Length: 422
Image 1 (cartoon, rainbow, N blue to C red):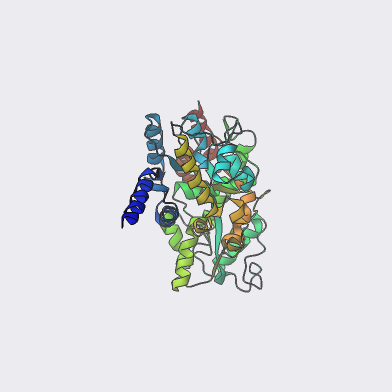
Image 2: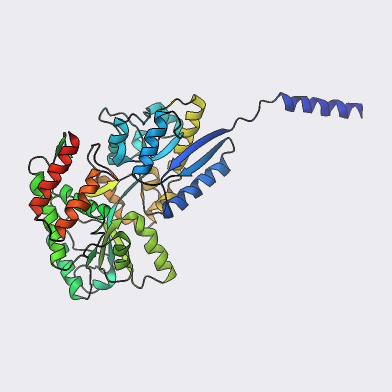
């Protein structure tokens, strides 16, 4: 009995002598709603289950200007999160406001990552003009071309396997639009013609496919980019005049035109892939569909794109906290296949090139756009919820509905945006 008491006492003393369990609390901010929000919350929950030593405390804030304003003000007073989601298109603004911490090669090593793990276009967009990295890309999301196969059965635009084919020029695409209209489509190509994002992304894609620049070296539509912008607007206007695209369609209406079977094509972000998949699984879509990258309609392949990324605020942080944050980011990247289920292309190449992603359709089909992704120009007035988006709804949308001549609209964009750069 005395021996047992001695052993128990020694055990208790040993237990008391052990250091207290140190758990790192990581404060996380994101702007992710809808399906993106559901998937991210699931990833956070799984990380917390697998890492009792690091716990993420997540908060979702309002998307757009409110989010980035909150980031700026909170970091300025040292009350920002430990890690946050960030659009790469907003990087120039973030750098100008000094809210982003540099992410070094040593940081990447702690996260179990390296620069070679990421697609070049995404890595460039995550870097400053000094070449330093200020965010770690999580995905590449772009607009893609959804299509309703029923409008093209037996035509030159559908191959024997039921895949879209033969659209390798603007002329071929417009021929497909005319064919779809003849087949009864009331909106051969649907996109949000009355929404800033929908109009901007289509316009920017057509501009970049001509090799044009929206902003370069502090100048808006430099050189022949003014003519190229006018041409992009002229094309979008022609689609209205021919009855190929809806007039003043809000975002939800543009999606509904496709899901209801009235639109043969739909230009929208990859984020609507889950909508199509869910409806098809439930048997409520009513037709077979597919999705491909926006075809090469002009001189070169290019597609508007952006990325969700992880950034660390520029504020004081203990080394052990930073290490925990980097481990969180590394884990998220390596488990990005779950995030790809939202339609995104993983920016982390080991996931994008994995057998699991190769079987994920239609993502795997359009994933090659990662190599030709066209990010917004490096400018404080570009990116999501920025003046360039305002120009899309205030100038380009009226123009494609006949209220301005294409060149008038291009000149107005140049004047208005240039004034904001002074």
